[in-house]
Length: 197
Image 1 (cartoon, one colour):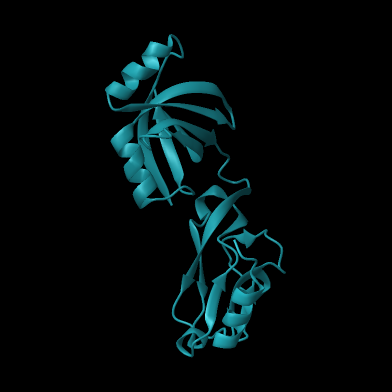
Image 2: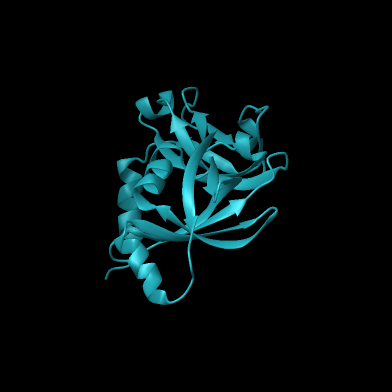
């Protein structure tokens, strides 16, 4: 999936220029990578937040700079510690035919019978590394847990293969498990074993 974003070149000095941009509702940014020199740019803050919210981090962002279109990925962005406002964005220009690696979020889908039976669900993996061409990169990997009973677990190896991308994270990594519910006796034993404060 791709989305278009018109941006403008900006000067890098003086520092006051960056503050002025932010007051104008722009975010200082930079684009570098495939077939482009490192170029300072400014992006519209509202439009960038909309892209993040609706398209996610792994979508191709087609930047238009002075009429030239450049396929990019959002490489990273920084936020202000206190206000949480985005203060800088780095775009990575990409070759659309070349495979790249990114992180994708792991999302559990459904309700496990083991949980209904009183088991404890533990998710051990929240992100995986995936490999694909930029247009096929997934934002999230959905993991169906509707077949899991108490004592069951799912690893990367258990996930169905996709024609669009490959999961690079090691196959033995455990994603989720359903364990036996703890008994009152076990909880009491733990409390007794805990050192007094």
